[in-house]
Length: 117
Image 1 (cartoon, one colour):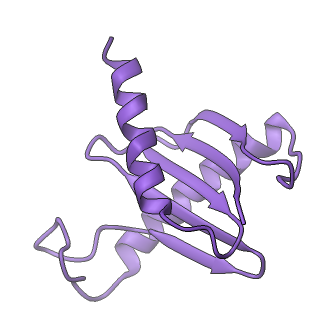
Image 2 (image 1 turned 90 degrees about the vertical axis):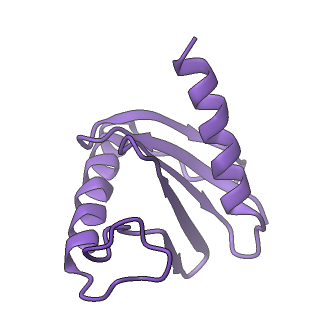
């Protein structure tokens, strides 16, 4: 159980940062990371528009605009935190890794501290 990758995508879909976080993280080239970042941004936007129901605790009273928050697949968990400015913090981890929400919030705090200095 452990973290695999962290990537940060800006509000227009550009990749800001990507980092492997563990020994078992697959090695991916820079061009592939750029493609992954922009593809995830597009899928996140489509998911936000395609949801027909208002989710509990949704920030938008008109509908479900939260997009992708978590994807669980065979051998992988992808967790996303979208900030109010539209920046997305995405972490991938092995199944069974706990506290992904808390880790993403802490990364966001650290990022904010560095960006605002």
